Length: 217
Image 1 (cartoon, one colour):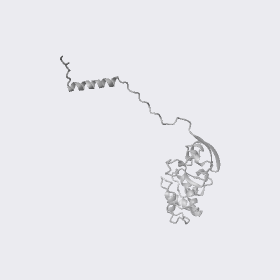
Image 2 (cartoon, rainbow, N blue to C red):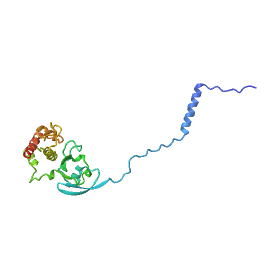
Image 3 (tube, rainbow, N blue to C red):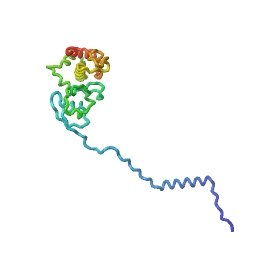
Image 4 (cartoon, rainbow, N blue to C red):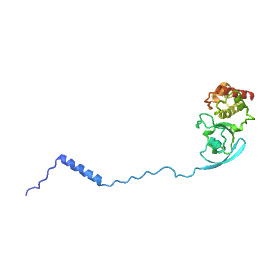
């Protein structure tokens, strides 16, 4: 009995058949659906709010604010005290300086809800055109205000500087940390370094603060 003849297939034809088979299988197979990634964002909802009271320039103001509201925006946008200026909004220029519980701070860097019940003094609370604060009068006398944009922060900061020196608080340039500091030009430049005057009226500002500091020594 003769053995069945086995057809011979060349290597080239075998490769063509294999490629065609693989292509047909890929086309006929359904593409699996890709699941959409789950969103990690929290569901939208109302912003958290908080009731608080700010005593600004001697008057209590009950407020209900978004907890993300800065003290600067609370003063300007909610209490309409526009004397405090928004400059860089990053705590670098000092235009927003106010006095909170006797300490000068950048109001753009702190949240209003952190100062519930605090005593806040802005430039409006230091004096009036008819009865100016000594520093306001000195800035006018020595032409330390120029365009005036930074002036509210400069004056509020200067009030804090004079108080710091009177209380004996040293600075980074104080040679003797145990001795009462003297408001020298070097001390004044260091303590006022966070308040920028883009008009360049620094020498006039130094003269104004030095005059008032000397009269209160």
